[in-house]
Length: 450
Image 1 (spheres, one colour):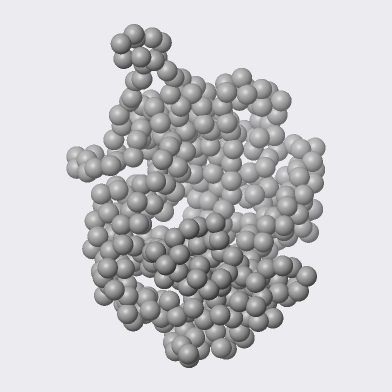
Image 2 (cartoon, rainbow, N blue to C red):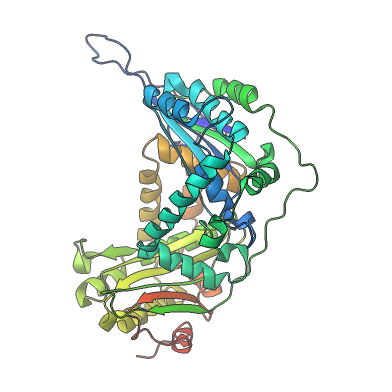
């Protein structure tokens, strides 16, 4: 897929699935001067992440991302770095559980070079033995840094218990023993198995000519295999298990807890109602003002009662499953009460949420969607992700219409389906001695004792 856009569609464009408007800006409207060069973002979104790994090669996709900038058959690592720096461009990549992304931000006039560099990286990387050995140490140090980010740690534990013994339960970086043994053959095998034309999206945003992008794609990516030698690799099945992981450490000042139920994948019709429900719960930390005037009832209680340092409702989607829940950071003494009020608000979603609350959450969700698309980087990200997830980019007016169609009855029905009387997955790290036991939390999913 090739997709480009110059600004987000703020109103319906019925005759086209995409649109482009090239803006020309002068230094002064009265005294025309040289044109101000615009910037563009271009990237490759690949339908391949850690979910497609097994226990033996877990960590390969992330390792491969690190190797992408270590030299190709045309460019040494030094040549690549100097070329990007001389262009004034930025080149980066990231790996998730289902996707790998390589992207570049540059002046629009340098877009052809940026596309050529991205094509060179994914098709001609040398994957030299010396560079592989050097990156092992880099990735192992990155693991140590991740271990200091307690939110990352808790969410890795949450996936490990929610999707235990499946691909989504493994970490993106992989275990240290795998990083120490991954070799060039493993990296080449991952590329030849997954880097095929049907699983790659070339997306761009900014001052981009769509026709030019198509020509660049044909020229630089025309040799990518369009078909698999055999059957396309199946998406590994991942089943959800209501369970928990607790890592008690009383020396830590705060407890970090995530609790989630199984939700749905990107394309499921219940995704939008769950997004609205997620907005109803909201997020909060002690730097917020507002108090009783906060839109989230849970935030009001947290603010007035000092129940936590912060909390964040989340709705994480994958192709065929998802996690809907809440991440909280609390002192040990308030953990039990915070869990109680969290479940109380969840039960309220299932039984007594009002039309006024839903209307406010819908407006907030639409506002957040628009604010998220502020700049070429998030727009490009939105295009690439949606093309992989939906095989099209959903126009904002369509998303707004789907959000507007939701009412309180919809929220009650959907939340009852996915939250009420469901066994949650729980991950807790720190002084968690006051966190209620699993059976008590499980009972709180269908009945709240005062």
